Image (cartoon, rainbow, N blue to C red; front, side):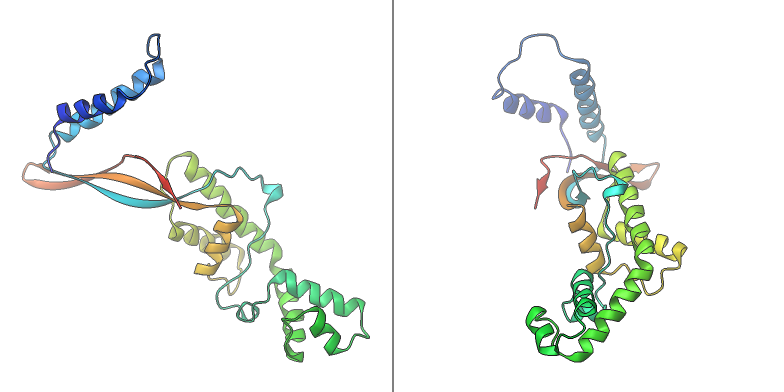
Length: 228
């Protein structure tokens, strides 16, 4: 698909006519932006094959400080997760049983409906003990991933689910956090904790022939980002 710069600028002029005119000379930022647009569109004229494709990158407007970060735990294959018991729920069960040693199992079930069998009590104790001993390391993994996400975001580097997963695995390996897999469930929980969503971005792609050889060039042209 060839690009005709004069047609692009003609279309831009038609669309911008709908905006109210603002008196006064252009600002430095407006001049720089116009020069960047002209340079980018003019360069496309000499490309042999241009195209546009839609990509999705992760984004968050949150500005969370390290002191406010909570550890992200849950993994897909956690035994307790398969019973729909979170760490917080297990901690409540263990604390209640410790503070009320005379409670019957029926009373426990009434107060905690997810405890279906006696064996669930032992699972809750084990879950709290295991996660408690690893809490600081989980917190370190969570903080590391958020720091890397914030840095990449500030530098305009595209971020995907797999990016977060690799950050988490790298940090977990350094901390010797056994059994941590940075599963799909963990990544989703991480995104929920930091209000991370997907942003749609239009990416310009081109193939240019140089001395008989094809070289690919990709430029991230953010246009009309959509959120979901």
